[in-house]
Amino acid sequence: MKNLLKKEKGFTLIEIVLVLAIAGLLLVIVFLAVSGAQKSRRDKQRKNDLSRIAAQLESYASNTNGCYPAMTAPCVTVSWNAFSTSTYITGANLEDPTTGAGYSYDAAFSATPATGHVSYRIGTACDGTAIGRGYSVNIGLEQGVSCRDNK
Image (cartoon, rainbow, N blue to C red; front, side):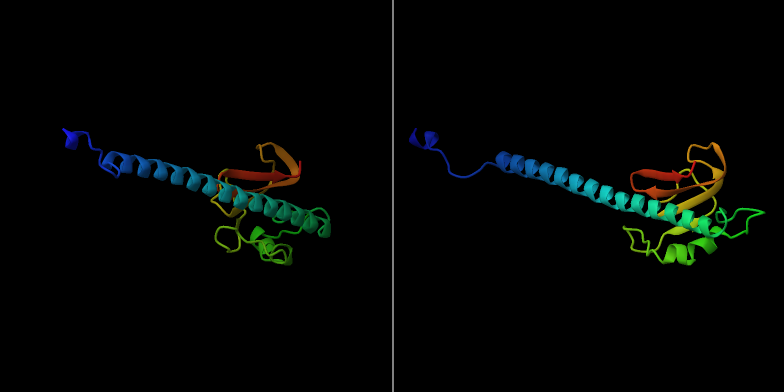
């Protein structure tokens, strides 16, 4: 009878599995929180870069009598790719924070560009309304798209 009431020292298999499951759940929660914070930080950098690109477009226009890249007559026609490789962009050392490579640029505006891809269009605002001689430029984020225009 004494042997039946004697308690064995140690942990049962169920206790060990339960502790491991709780620890695993906590690790997943921490990983997701850290991952989300990193994405937010990189997206914030991309938004700052987008603001700098918009400022450079304004600088370009101020040097070309109010004409933005790829505008037609009476403005001088300059392609977006020529703009992106000019001193306006390369002088700013704009690089995608995920890859470290320079942003890819495209004059064909897309509503949802790939992450780290910058799209640009003349005469249309971010919401699709016509803005005459203005522009809109957007950049793909890890958590959506950011767009800037000058309407």
